[in-house]
Image 1 (spheres, rainbow, N blue to C red):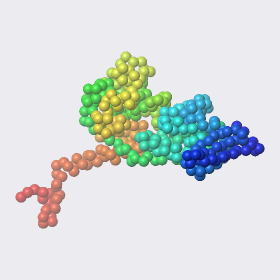
Image 2 (image 1 turned 180 degrees about the vertical axis):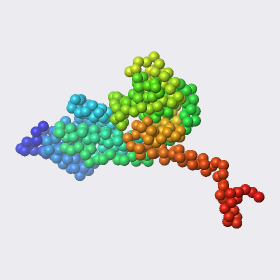
Image 3 (image 1 turned 90 degrees about the vertical axis):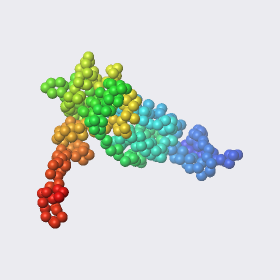
Image 4 (image 1 turned 45 degrees about the horizontal axis):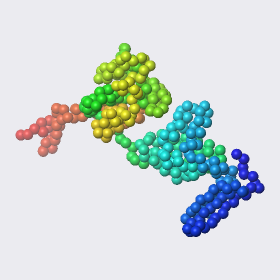
Length: 378
């Protein structure tokens, strides 16, 4: 759109209504642009000046009154083939994560305050900070396009940063082996297949998206039972590579092997391995509802099943470096969190020595002499 012609006059009139309120009327030459009524004259003047400034900058105010929801749909369609598939996925996902109140705003009515409220809400919704950052970047690209289309004068996103999580980070709460068995028994009363899914998750350490993306062909039986983890499939997204971008092999313990073999039975190699008892892909919300997770999980998250696997491995003496590989961690410092939580094999062995026979040997007697039998009663 061309800039406004210099001979055209952008005018505003302020009038007082019979009820005591003030109405601002804005015109572009002879063309009526809009009017709005306020409680005070100052508010009316401020709004009129803002509208005049937008018109002088060449913004089409009437076009800018299109709702965010409507413009967003057009923008996503225009992005197809112009951006990477991953970027397009995040862009399209905005329609799902933007709240109704935001989608109902006019494009040129969105302010930095609105965006700040939106980002804080996302941070409080138990979304990872990285997800909030990605959505903010997509929203920024959307409003940058609106500026180019002269629907608004400036992006309301540019000056607002994604806040860090307001709530403290959730600590991991791994299950013990006994707790996993008990949990599986309770869930089996509701759904036996989903109880098996819990056991598989707790003994393999796979992320939820990795569990959903496993195919029958990823289950290796010889020479040793292993799972080849090479893809992830978040709900509502296309299948992609794992978080690290690399495939890995995860051993299948005897506790899990028969469960996986039963899931693979009568399926083709390209079929999903982890499915419901009806053969459908697993979904987090349906899983939590069908397993009564909020009660039976006792405050744990589904992701704590992944933490459980790392702790089970370390408790059995698997080296930290091996656990890092099985978990798919990019850095050993991530795996070290489990060591700090659980302690090392050496720590536990040392504690066993302290608590074993002869723990009281070498105590000092009342006369100050160190005698091996000083702990014995007379």
